[in-house]
Image 1: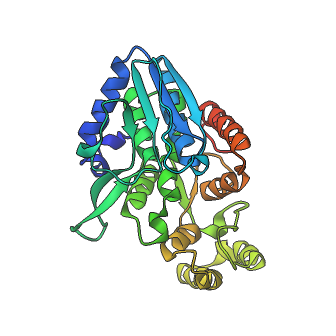
Image 2: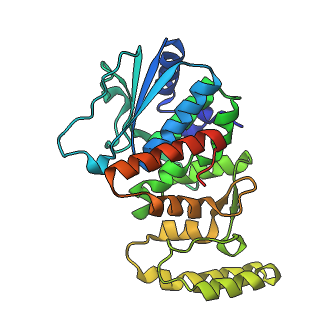
Image 3: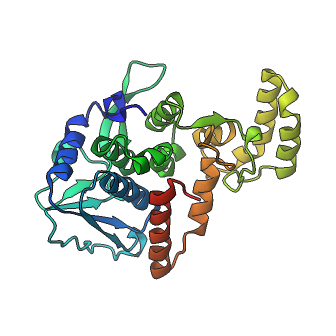
Length: 299
């Protein structure tokens, strides 16, 4: 497992992340607050896993989902712990130097500059809270069993962000490629996926996909390209599905370990299963957190 903090993704915020790690390591007690939202719970799982692996005393509180928080109301982060951490995935993107942490340690989306693979020009991007917490966890306890089990989920936060719905997201691609290069994930085209969920692909023909999957192993590269283009064509008529996200779902499905179902399908299934009611949502979030910490898996 490589040190993700040493990659170019973190060059603009490495000092900040290291500072947060040192605060956690030096605290006698830590209190972590997270909302009952997917990104927040996954981020919390990274931090808790690291603290369990490193024997850092901590407490946690799951707050109601942001969608249930009355507009204008602040969350209550009161605690007697030495260090208070709040995971705020719903915040706008911040410049590191602008964050006020006089009352607590805030984990919010951070502005960074990033290069496209085929360009030296820097583009504005953001590091979501999940990848930040993954980096923090890896620094607190790099060889921790629980931390390592969660490694393959480091890019889930960026998949959930809206940036991929608008244009190509170089940050997501870089995270994906880092995880692939180190062997934490594999990337497979849709026909090679066992039991894929195509609910994310409106208008796609399940029968056409099934027929293609049967013929896939005997097809050449150009035949595969043509077949996938034809398979994806009906999806392009849906204006809610961006071309970059469609491309990922067709060509670059993520597979982890011995999982039978791809990660994108698991994310979608989890989102669909998440209860809308406040109390039920918090229970679901708590159960998911427990599962992530104990198994490192969404399902």
